[in-house]
Figure 1 (cartoon, rainbow, N blue to C red):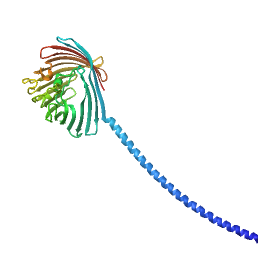
Figure 2 (cartoon, rainbow, N blue to C red; figure 1 turned 90 degrees about the vertical axis):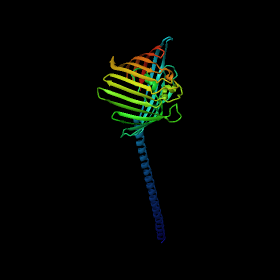
Figure 3 (cartoon, one colour; figure 1 turned 180 degrees about the vertical axis):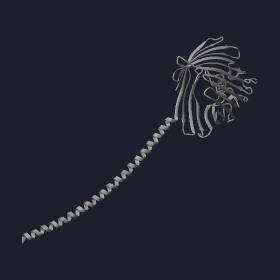
Figure 4 (tube, rainbow, N blue to C red; figure 1 turned 45 degrees about the vertical axis):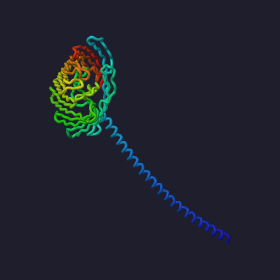
Length: 372
């Protein structure tokens, strides 16, 4: 009897424990399912985040690659360094000689997009007086339709009044008299070798934008012959660099004009240029109408396997004894230059100049120039 009671008690207890145990397992399973759902949601969210980050990284990489590549392709950096040694022998005075940095130029040009480009050039120039200084020679923004023939330029640059090409070591007298640099706005057209532009600027003799000029150019040729020529007109020649540097304020305006032509055939080149005022500059002279010319011939050849150029020139002026402090009346020049290594040139020049008093000066200049 006791055994039966005990057995029943044990069975009842086991049934009770089994029910409790079963309930506990179900609860744990439910909890595990919830936890798995939470983990799945967390993993899914993390995967979405990873995908977004991957997309951002890919976009940044593409943007960086595109930007870096176009940056290096669109920007050009270049420069020139010219060192000169000079011996000057004037009539009736002691000889002088010196070594100096004639030119140090550094430029950056960028093609910003299909329409827009920009350029900056820093320039140091010295004529042997050791009075040179660094200037912003060029700082321009250029806009041009790639599918059309018009262009606009604005900023600081050398205005298109004169050409001043030369194969000599020294600058031509036309450049000494007529080169004009200022902040201007220019609009032009070009088509089939023909080009033209108009420009406006304030200048140093005015307090308003009252100066302007015109420029026409033409270039044509074939494999045997090339012609390049042009005409220029400026409403006030007293805005040229030489007159401005002379610090003489004018009491009147005198227009100036220039004509240029260059012929190239084979290794032979002929250059001719003329520049003149249309009336007198009263602050210098009430009667003189200054004019300037440059005639030059050059021949290219090989010397000891290196490209070389020999050039001769004749330059002069008329009624320019007081212009910009006084210009030479005559110059006779001869020069030889040679590219001794890539982008490295040496040159030597002899110049005999005569002023309006008849005094002569002999100048020998040697130059070492590097372009990069």
